[in-house]
Image 1: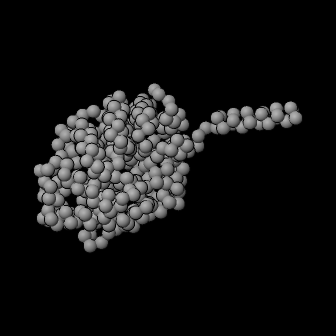
Image 2: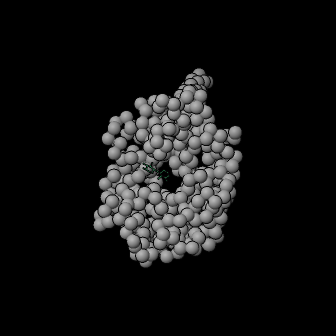
Image 3: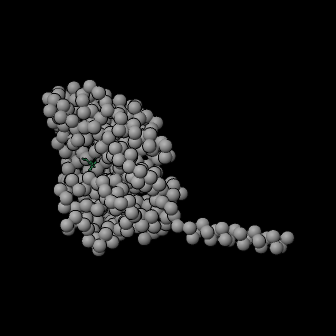
Length: 356
Ligand code: XIL
């Protein structure tokens, strides 16, 4: 009897030892354990590359279309919606048990020429936009769990940006500040009441005039029960010294309003010399990834971390910086994990409970 007890205890101890010794296999295993979403942006045409698809499915539990759900891809022609690439991504996500974030319903950029050069009246634009939001959200109803409803509406001074949808000529609410944003959130909620609705922004991660304006808008919306569920902080980092305490403070003030925060487009671009980054920079890059992820994990209202692509083979940074910067992502061009990947893995495996 006693022997059996000891045998069983020994087995349990050995088994526990194995579990704790066993390194985590992937980012998503750790994220799943803590109920965190770890996602990445995808160009559906790349899903046919086996190394791309297998890395994606192994490491991430969420995907977002890098471009496939934007106006210029979906609405190349006025008369026809091109849902093919977006549908392919949604199928991949379903097959691999991943969530899908939608990006983006309304943006002043990446719109087709027939729309920007179409000389539409505000009335016509308003009708076109409402139809677009409704059609797109209903098409992906129950499949896309969260949408970036509006992307990049503020400038660096915290003013509402000039745009097709705001005042050029706008949907009829020009000069009325965030009223057009409120309108599109209302349309989005009506079209798909189950989807989480996010406002997504660049360079409003730390404490500055832009993030103050976002905060003021979200505070106003939540007070007046305008349907908004979260703020997406893009987090395209090009400095090795992002102000992490300011990021944490911004996440804290937003989540205190009762909305979620998602880190939506994380990448850390490095200067390139003859096409390569310096080894020291790669080490520092890992620390930036680590600290950003830690700032999110330390706040229970920060519920998703998403990178803007995952392999240096494919990243928007190259063309965006005309080749001056790159190597911004956690995997190299041959899908080998970089130091940045190991930093991500360590933080996700430590989970939410650690404070440093
Ligand atoms: C970028 C895509 O990565 C590119 O493929 C495309 O050519 C231009 O847009 N902020 C956003 C994203 O919200 O939609 C942008 O994506 C990057 C900046």
